[in-house]
Image (tube, rainbow, N blue to C red):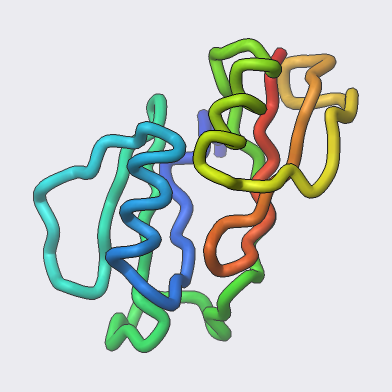
Length: 127
């Protein structure tokens, strides 16, 4: 089997409308309109999707123990790190760590870390 890339990530959220607004506004992720139910919202970033699932979802296909704040993931930005930091400040989103240099999938990158509304850790990286 040859894995090509990650297609989507599903996050468990406590408040679907607030989470949608956070990811749409802060990260400029467009909302995909074709929704199958009121418990999931899908957003696009690059060639991947981010699905937000309401905590008390009736979905049968999900992780064994979906929980708030359990995700820890990295996204790659196309902006300068200073511009990203200023953008986050304009939304009153504190940086919890960074900038930190580390190795990513494509080599050296610099990252800062924030939490979303449910305390998931989001690494924002620039190559």
